[in-house]
Length: 63
Image (cartoon, rainbow, N blue to C red):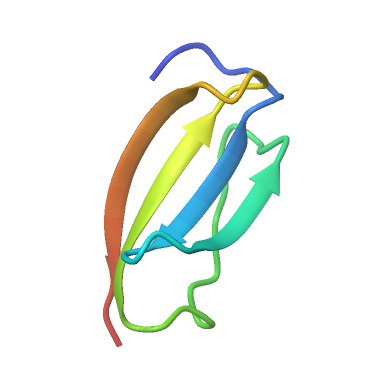
């Protein structure tokens, strides 16, 4: 990952591409409560202040 910039925004999408969560000015470390997320695969994107994707990945919620 590149150097930390306080203007990063974290986006989380469900596997169908619908935006589930957006957190602006994310801290360098973040803990998310996934209790409200349905079971399934999600995609995250970390974007800089210009909207350029700096990092992307996926995670799975299992209940």
